[in-house]
Image: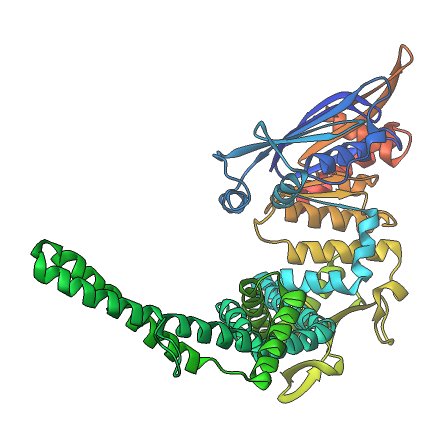
Length: 572
């Protein structure tokens, strides 16, 4: 419930402070006095769009503050939005200047989105322009869901729909990537096959170089080794001057020396070891000589292998190690490219299951809505008859449009595919007719402004019966309504105010006569300044104000006003 509204430097209001009471509160006054400006300020402090042109001329900023008394339900709702200690009251404030808007909740600065979400919990404002919302199919569906309190199921539908939408977007993204990466996949496949065919070994190069050196110098190696063997061992024709033979002859002389002088034993042994070493060298040289192969074919093969490895390095890295690392990298890339089709297939399977879930929720919603539509028809028609529209017909039609690409849902026992969205498969049309003997038509085609006002009030009274929002504000939605109907609407609003606080800006004295609290909004000029004031009327002040609304405020109108008040009291 709104307890206090403080407005400073806003439009034509210098400073205004109103302590609003429970029940039905009405604001009356001449056109242009500032009644709707008060409602504009209230809408601003509950998070609606800022109009910086509304800052009062000559001031840098405007300040609006509202104090709301909270129900337990509202406190629970607010706790889900903001982490603060909440008592039985909450203070919303907003300061606007040319550059920015500062929003606060109990003194703590918050984003405007948070203020707006909390504002939606504590207060709901409807003006003349809001009548247009009744002709909008999406809003009509929202009204029906709120009436049946099936917002949780609707929210579930919305969440599951968004999941399905995200899956579709992911599948589309993967398919686009697959299409775009087709050329890349072909290139990577080619590179992988080329490197794999080359059978690259990081340790291969050093062995290749050594082998090529041997094969390309085989004849020279044979010549040099043969000469070395001849020097060490001699040839078949003459071995007298070979190292091996000379060592033998020298060793024989040392043997004789040793027999004469035993101290030369070590020299004799050294000579023997030298001979053994030379003989070993000769054996190894002969083995090496036999291993030398003059093979031009093998040399050509090895040189071709070097060309292949150099080509790999030219394309894929400066060294064979880099080539191998590149091969491992594109192998992983290739695996990812190859698995994209599997990802798409898996997502499609999940998508099918997600559509099954959606079908169940959409079917549940549709069944509930069709039952609720009949109940809403009956209640709204009953209300309309109570506000002077005895022949009124009000219908709520729910249509399910078939679509081959839509959602498979069972409707009336038959499963078919229907067009669907985040709110389900249902399209709602509210129809109306004020007279008998005709079929109802969409509201936009048949309802006048006054009739829309009464239909709108009928829906508010029917739908807004919970304590979800404590304050309900109507800004001249009784436009186009006559005096007798104004009395009936006033009674209905007074009945509604027994459940929740109602604030109403009105020009109808019949409606105002039902007020628990009657505020007169007055605009005056003083010292070239416009001053807006609000006076809470008591006793004869109410009579006088109603008299002015009826006529000129003479004795006759005062008598009529008093009679109007007495009648209102008798009907409460």
